[in-house]
Length: 103
Image (tube, rainbow, N blue to C red; front, side, top):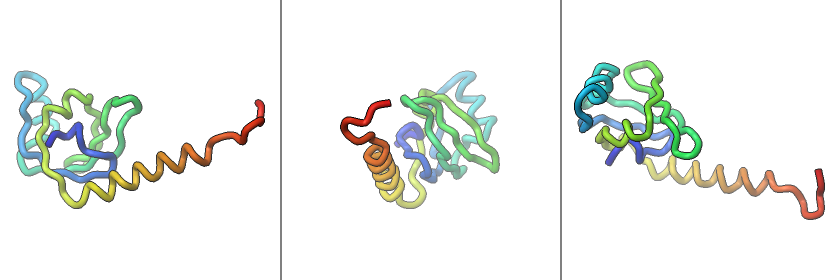
């Protein structure tokens, strides 16, 4: 599984960084090393960057960089995914204007 697949609020453990060259080295320098645990704080709109908390600090990484980091889930990701789904569906339901209501 890749970090780009992790939902917001999910904790993870880094297995390895599969990106090479400068990008892979930079990620390793920032703390993405084997057996390091972190969490996805939030995700940008339209599959934008991810805010990751790792080694006690927050970092924003691009989605393609997150796709180059293999992780394993820590805890139950299904509960996080269900909560996000529930929030988005209820949020849209309550923000609709009644029919016939004009600005």
